[in-house]
Amino acid sequence: MRICRFDEDRVGVVRGALVHDVTDALELLPPLRWPVPPGDHFFNHLDRLRPRMEALADSVPGRPVSGVRLLSPVANPGKIIAAPVNYERHLAESRADRGINMGTEVRSIHHYGLFLKAGSSLIGPSQPVIVHWPDRRIDHEVELALVIGRKGFRIPEEAALDHVAGYCIGLDMTVRGTEDRSFRKSLDSFTVLGPWLVTADELGDPGNLAIDLVVDGAPRQSASTRDLVLNCAQLIAYASQAYTLWPGDVIMTGTPEGVGPVRPGNVMEARIDRIGSMRVAVAG
Picture 1 (tube, helix red, strand yellow):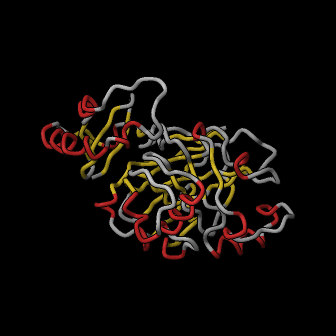
Picture 2: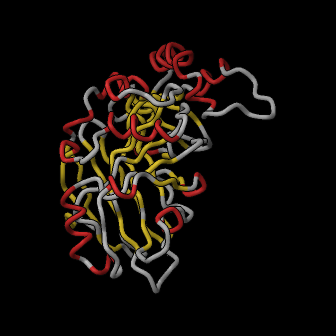
């Protein structure tokens, strides 16, 4: 199943080039009371919602996906967890490019561990990335993003993928500088998820997906998830050693080589096998 959030927080099932509005399925969600329980309310109850969503998608006429405003498929992630330098070739380019390393030594993911991004940085592909630091280089980083579907702590690697609800394309935007990653990557609009979530049962093995990004038609990044230093299962197991993972938590798996600057007026187009593609504008 391909699940999207669109227009004014409508929920859709995407089939081919059409989106079927299944928002009425949200009537099955239990009411919320303060304090709100951990996890994204939708993903906490996705298993309960799916049969109703499927039935509605069978009966509701579709609208062209091109005619709706696609938002992030995750509305309220408890955490956005990110993996630094998780491709060897990106590690090499980071060490070679002073515009990336800012004169500091770049080490491996095993040295840095993981880091967190602010939930307030999250947008969908219909919303522009805002680059409002004109004196600083701001780079694109395309990544496979996974969304947790089942609570877990200290999850063994062999069971890790069982905790995934689905996968999206992610953009991890970055202000280059010497500040901590969590600061430089948490600006408003600096985490883009979309164009929809492909459920884990539909996508299958995430270990060999082609991933690429072009800017204004010029190729920038091209790789495969088979080149990840820590693959999806290893990242989930690693993250869960530190954090309890809740439904709706997002893990950004890291970017391949080819990162580069963007400026207002650019359009980024990101693509990942078996998920699709999304176009994201850059504004000042």
